[in-house]
Amino acid sequence: MTTGAMTPNRAPMSAGQEGFWRLVHAEWTKFRTVRGWVIAVLVSIAAITAFVFVATDVGRSCAGPGGPAACPAPAQPTGPGGVPVVDTFYFAHQPVTGNGTITAAVTSLTGRVEVGQDGSGTPEFGPGLQPWSKAGIIIKESTSQGSAYAAIMVTGSHGVRMQWDYVNDTPGLAGSASASAPRWLRLVRDGGTISGYDSADGTRWNLVGTATLPGLTPTVQAGLFAAGSLYGSSSCTYDSDFCTRGTGVFRDIGLSWPATGWTGTNVGGPNSVPGPGTLRQSAGALTVTGFGDITPAAGSAYGGNGQSLQRLLDGTFFGLIPLIVVAAMFITAEYRRGLIRVSLTAAPHRGLLLAAKAVVIGAVGFVAGLVAATLALTVGTPLLLRAGGLQWPVSPFTEARMVVGTGALLAAAAVLALAIGTIVRRSAPAVAIVIVVIVVPYLLAFNPLPGSQAQGSGPGGGAGWELQVTPAAALAVQQAVPQFHQLMAVYSLNSGYYPLAPWAGLAVECGWAAAALALAYYLLRRRDA
Image (cartoon, rainbow, N blue to C red; front, side, top):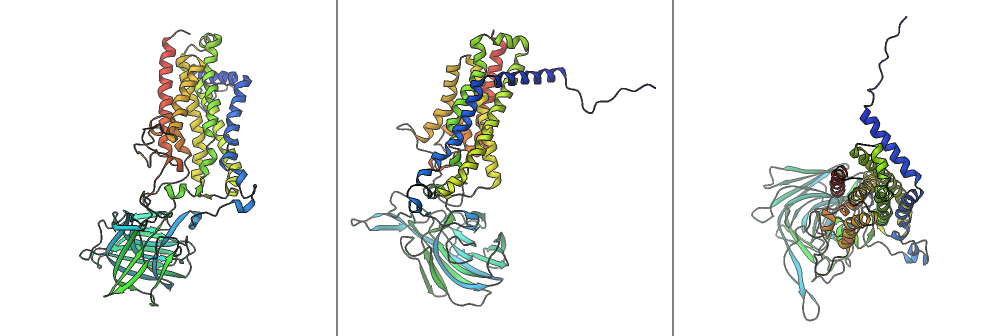
């Protein structure tokens, strides 16, 4: 009996593919047999991991010398999910139980902004509003700072907004409120769900947003509020930077719950803002005036009062240097010893040889970054919490992006160093060039030269250009503190914010590595060994 030919379960690898992966294996063998290179990669991992002890400042932690007394209390309260928040405003409220509705028409939002001081140092105010000054209606679990809430409001320059639990914001009707064009606002509670509506005439209502507040207690506080918006300026004399006072005028206020009368409360306490808020009732209108804001504590407010998880990866800056040296030497050592001729004889297709080296050194960099970032976060997170700072909560997705991004950052840097080494053929110049395009821009971004532009304050800003157009932009992939559009804040580099989005910054570095690799391939094909 004859046996038919067996059909393989998968398509066989082509000769070119087989040859390439043999080259990859050969290059990996070269790498792992050079003890100095392996040690340098381990040093890179150790540098990134060990820096967490500097970043967390263990010597002054609650467990260190000085004990708990050495740990200052956080300046901000925390909201749902542990988010650091600013929660200071004037609240005219009454307790309500169960499901119901609150409705009001806002006929005016005005404000006063500190413009300077008189001869005795007393603050002087003039008319003005900040873009996020606000007045509206709110349902809040309690008058305690950080408690859950949902609110719909008129703002200084952004029309009607619905906001809830500090970090959420969605737009409604555009334009400002006036006596001739009031903004009607409504909140409807149904268990733990609160829906916000707006209307231009009080008849036709539009759903603006729906907030789900898990665990909302049966009895909550419902009412009217006003806040000037968190604002800092050179003329602001208050440490809290609440230099704007917002005033909202409300009419046609209706509650479906039994009315018990309005109580005015300075949420955050009377001493947390420049002056207490006020509640005035006259001619069928309620006028509410207050300083403060209801926002996540981000930007300059966050940067001055807390520690971020991304601080644990600050050692990446130091771990890059030994990896860059190894990656450059992965090709320059062969030129120096004349072994490149042997490699090119064994691999006549020069592009495949360069690609194999890039795969190996890129994989080494990626694994090194992955291991180092995992160790840094695992070791450093408990230390960071013990150090007493207020830490922004990080989701598992963000933490995974930080870890994988660090691996990709190191991989791209290693490929860039390999390409530069191929172009210049000498280790010292190659290492110097890569350090100039990665390390130097990082230093310049945080320490601008005299006369240069100050640090950037947001994505795509003119300042911080060093972290937008150079490979150092990839460090943005480690950013853990979010940005919010619904508050005035300075998003500076020193507060942990980069001018590009995380993956956009990494893409800049990958673009540099790809361009350098293409040039290296072109020169490798045209030049003699």
